[in-house]
Image (cartoon, rainbow, N blue to C red; front, side):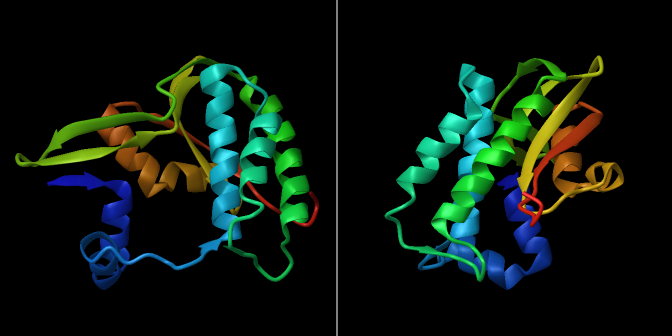
Length: 179
């Protein structure tokens, strides 16, 4: 059996939800706009790292493709508002990425044996040198995390265990009223 962090986390929080999602194949009928927004931001960053392209341009192109989709927007969100927020977030991210050297393994699949007949599997966002230390990076959108919270991240612990890299970091993309 292959165990990804997503599967494990869903089972841990609610075994019935795991059954509905992974066994029965149930999904939401409408995608929440904020999830689509987060995916576009994530793809813009990894695309920038992988191909050296401008993350603002990548985000803009990906987000524009969502304009005609039937997305479920939150109370204060709209397509235009999320467009502007995404551009600001991506521009800020460019500066943050400059401190990371020797980026590799962007969106790379991994698997490793676990407990005999099982395997841990997943996709690492990327690996790079942060201040000379090999580090696993995970991109998150939605809320900010402290350094302490990043070190306690179960997902990063899962990846660190699977890949044998001790240092972990989160790149957080937080949609706040100050944007």
